[in-house]
Image (tube, rainbow, N blue to C red; front, side, top):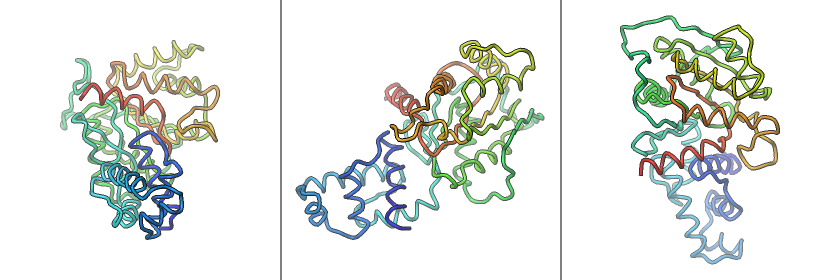
Length: 304
């Protein structure tokens, strides 16, 4: 893997951890490390003290260690990142013990479903309503057993309402999400997949979801649409997969900033995490939504 790819991977991991991309000095420290330079040589390049560069390096190694689940230092950073690019999963999971385990962000605040939710009984096999829209066909699935087991646990044991699956494009997020849907489908009333690749308005997306539950007239305003949708998500146990979330974000702006006219997606996703319902919204994206970072802070404070 070349230096550019390593920097991209490190930037993604640091962004997942801190909500901020690498700054100029951090990138220079990492790039110098990948090239085998000493702290003194890196410091000379950017006219900083060696001690300051060492401190920046120490902060980076700590953050990367927490994200990857193994000790990262200046000597092994390149090797671990090269290995992680192919063997780590594509998102981050944070469980109710506030412990980073593997890659899938789990945003949930309650472990118990409401009284009308479906009991998780392996003998209670049902035929769900499948509405997979333009979901790609899975021709083969191998590996990712750990990540798949973690996701299944978040759905069936932790009863999470919102999961964000993050990673580079082409790393296999869609395949993993669809394989998950195949494995858990007997525990849900509805399995729904929609791609956001062409950046539909939130009103269009929510109207499309409402039509799955009822073909009657759809209200025009977003507030009433959301109210009706969450009524259905309380009435039924649904898994809704929204793919290509990064296509909703504005170019050349802060990460996770929605395009004009698409801001109500933030409202939708925040409600999915915070209001009481029996379903789960699974978001696939190569860029982290800003509201997920805010929800992480809320949950971390609550669990401290």
